[in-house]
Amino acid sequence: MNPLVVSQVLLWILVLALALTVLALARQVGVLHERIAPAGALMMGKGPVIGELAPTLEVLDRDGRRHAIGTPREDGRSTLLVFVSPTCPVCKTLLPVLKSSRRSEAPWLEIVLASDGDEATQAGYVAREDLGAFPFVISAPLGIAFKVGRLPFAALIDASGTLRARGLVNSREHLESLFEAKRLGVASLQEYLEGRARPQAS
Image (tube, rainbow, N blue to C red):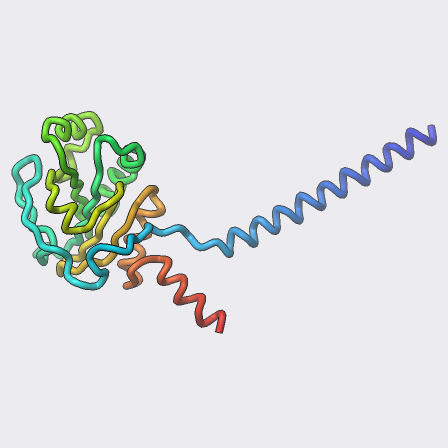
């Protein structure tokens, strides 16, 4: 019986040691999670400057409605331009987020989808993905004006026509970071977090 008792004692010691190790690792993961900054939209180097007036263009959506991009709005709402494409797989994963945001942010925001290319292809895209509720603009000059190089790309313009935020948006977190950047009055969440980190470091 002695060897059996010894083996049981050693087994329990091992189990307790493993439990303590798991608890220590869980605590460390929690500490790392607090230190990692939230990922905001990736702002590209080239393009219109945040805080300045956005490029102004007058475009028609697929329903023939006129949109004066970059000009002041009388209704006081902001405009979120989101550049998408039928051939962009990431854009497809972002569409449910945009549909949800269109409803939840409607009091202060209008979301306008923009693309370029063949109108028949775009019409199929709108029908296939059920995007009829969005103003959908087909305009290559619009993408050029905002220096769109990769998709999905978004630009947030406030009611006065000032560009408040822009960048690649691959997820809900990226999209919401544009709203938060506008609220905080910064170009991006990264800029805000870096600004907070500097006083702490000094």
